[in-house]
Image (cartoon, rainbow, N blue to C red; front, side):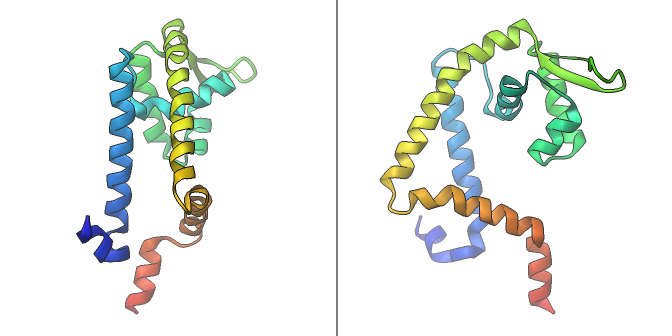
Length: 160
């Protein structure tokens, strides 16, 4: 770890990726350990559908701040697995919406206790850290700053 600690912001992205990969690997291990066939990559769509019931791919892409193509690819994977279905919006026949299939609804019931445990474990982890309560607000501020000016733009400005 000294390399990462000694390199400062030059390895910022690498450190975040390592943390993210370790977190997702552990969460996927929990699902597997409990015999649940679920991938952490599916979480955003499952979570949104669990609260909204049905959403268009456009709504998903906007909410997740990803391209329509990226949202569509993830939705397609979940449709192939029989976890969600695509249908016509009741209020606008031009619009396609996705919602859970019975198989997806059953899987949702299985993963929700895991989500609760993840929430509690992460809250506990952040409580253990002296500045843990500041982490999520700081990440939010960072994301907002990236929207205002990308790292690319900031680096280019430094090179001028």
